[in-house]
Amino acid sequence: MVVHVVLWELVLRCRTMLILIPPLVVMDIVAGIIGLIVFAYYANIKCDPLVNKDIANPNMVRQLFSQTLKRFTDHGFPHFLFSSCVHLNYE
Image (tube, rainbow, N blue to C red):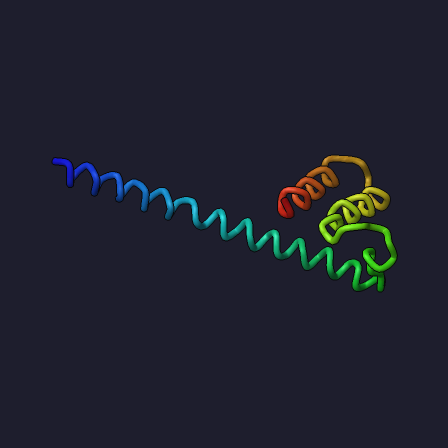
């Protein structure tokens, strides 16, 4: 009886893992794509914010990119959605 309960718990844990792995993979892929977008933006304008002393820490690039986007976009829902994706994927 005890072995049956332990095996059933193992099956449930494996099923949970199989359900949770695909969303995590998708989130990692989206985070990588957004990272490439940020890198491509600063490479395109030939600007290194760390060298220019615009930021003090390399982890501040996402905040600087979000602030830069705010200057060029409306302050509506599309900007809020993209900005929240940038912040969530890098935390």
